[in-house]
Length: 549
Image 1: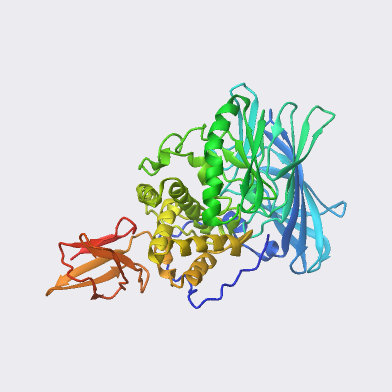
Image 2: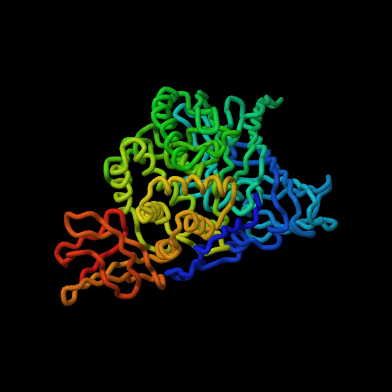
């Protein structure tokens, strides 16, 4: 849904001033066409899609159409939608007539016969066909997965985060504009089922022996979440009594895995929902339900139809990403990908450059789940263990308007950063209310990094902009320098962000931690009886360097 920026009135909301520390990436014309919100894209607000496709599995091909129903945000005669160049646009229909279009890279430009006036609700339909990109290593690359199950039956799935949904269907492919609702119709060969987002509205047996499945999505959904999963699925279900009432739980798995799925899903799903509703607020898609769908790839956060491919085992493909042992006590894919229902699906970044909003908060949700089961100390150990995955290779926030993500450190360093914010606030209930408030304030919205940081600033009563700026926009860790001269201790931060002033916990050995707030200028370290030998800085909860001079 295309929404204006939500202004957060707060004196603490300051602009991000840091400059990215990295070589400027090569930007192509195709990158700009895909990533920029030009007038040809902002001139219309998507209200409704009807995506209607037929799979030819033998040919690894697709034919179909997508209805675009929209509201004009200004007068226009020309607009852009997106479809990868290897797929043919067969026709664009407007009021029953073909209208002209041109193509450049993966962008399609449609010209209408007369001006469409601001405020008008209108529609057009794109008919298309071809062989979509086949993903070679989904979900890390994008496209459709064509494979077979253990019985030799076809098994097909979509996975397109990052590369974009237009790799397999025509859409306005920008995260800033989420469609309000959608109908997904997928026609598959006899004996197979399609599982997509939302709720199954109708199943229709067609004269040629194929079957069409119609799935209705009632909530706003981002493009990359729209999914098809085609296979010889069996279904079983359950319900969960959550904060907003009875939530349906639907599970679609291959026949030979039903019993394993009942055990694994039963052990993980309800505890996950209990934990994340406690920390993040109600599950955001009660109307569309919650589904886990077995997939021929590792997993993806497809809204209300979470793709699952972790082979019914705990950990991440059988190992613990944190190296602490805590990650082997639960199924990583169920917890992580379901966590995206709150951050990524409910709250979606306007630009893919801010994907840390999706991945940082969701990776942090893993520790909150650990805390719900095993206590806060276990959760803190899990977060500390995540540091081993951090590369500090490039900034976490990527370049804007060109469809490029930042560093994969958005996952683990993003989680570590949020835990530092919790430590700084030193009030777990206030932190929980901030997390829940994010879900409520930005419910079903697209956001910028500034909005998220601004809200945390406002609700915490602290200006943490420079803290976020340092960790999101630079690759170097801040260093706390401490020097001892003439029996006196002084400290300062060495950081990229001008005026960096993160509160940090220090103590004398064996004592209680207390907060000090160094700046980038030398100042007294107000810690009684501190010496070079007995100074301890909290490097367990803070991802920093310490230099004692």
